[in-house]
Length: 174
Image (cartoon, rainbow, N blue to C red; front, side, top):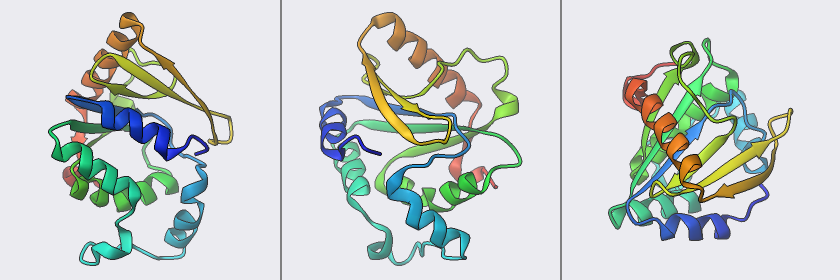
């Protein structure tokens, strides 16, 4: 992603109670995952016992924020059978969990009756929304932010509905 981790990290560090993330795409063409995805497709898997091989700045940030009491939750709506990208993402999600993030997966067929925003988003403390805008080739384009209470409520309701139906990471198989 072209958005700097520093600016996003500032948003995340400013959260006092919660940071939730809803992902609804079956593939992401983000620059910092290209090599890892290619290696995964060639058979490479992260070793849960070799933390130094997979710990990275993002996980430091997650651990920093969750250690101060901020609850971080991520929900992913996925088509089934899942795409190769989702299999890749699932195989490395244990790293997010190890850093303190809670993750759930919702098969898309179970989301048909939910009112969902048109884009993935982060919601900070139930009041600030950051939408992640992607192009048709799954590449990140930019972010839009809103502190409109109606938009925040829509995103909070959507996230909670997905979370309630979602399957905890350790119970979801791909």
